Image (cartoon, rainbow, N blue to C red; front, side, top):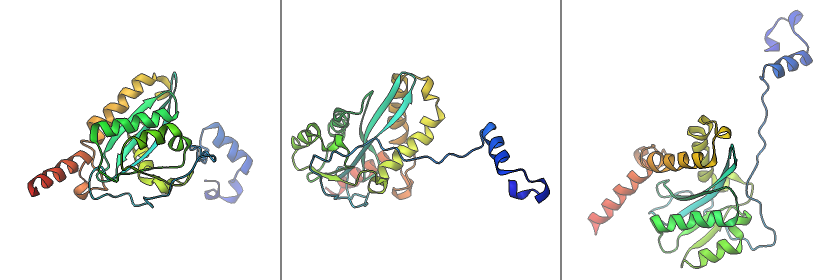
Length: 228
């Protein structure tokens, strides 16, 4: 803007900065702020996904992560599990804390509602919640699940999950004034967005013909039934 003016009319950089600051025109670079922190004292799992976020059938490759939403009465933490086959959110849990039990609840929700296939890959980052004894003991109770982990603070190793959270925040959270809303109210809105819109109605560009996740799943299950 300053360079567009004739040289004799250009204000100093200091004045430009002051005017922009007074009128809220300054751009602030966002710094990455990951929720998950690695526990250096626990053993780590190999990355079995290697940034391949596709799957040939439902229940064969799940990816997981968590995010936070600031509300009037504190932060709400969301842990979610996404099926790489169709992009459906198969499990999730929301709590006012980010302990390992939050991720365990999301896993239980996914298994009870959608199940999984033998040899399921369950991917996450190296956050302490996913390397905790509580979480790993829960996975050990379910046979044949293979735990996979990307690197902590490397969003590309879990890019499809990051993309889901970005969509959730762009299409719902940022349109609400969550800091003035109670956690329970925000929780209900997220539940409704996932169950009635994202999984069933929202077009997913990763699917053929941009089919919504559960529409693709229904068609696949129908085709499998016909073959059988």
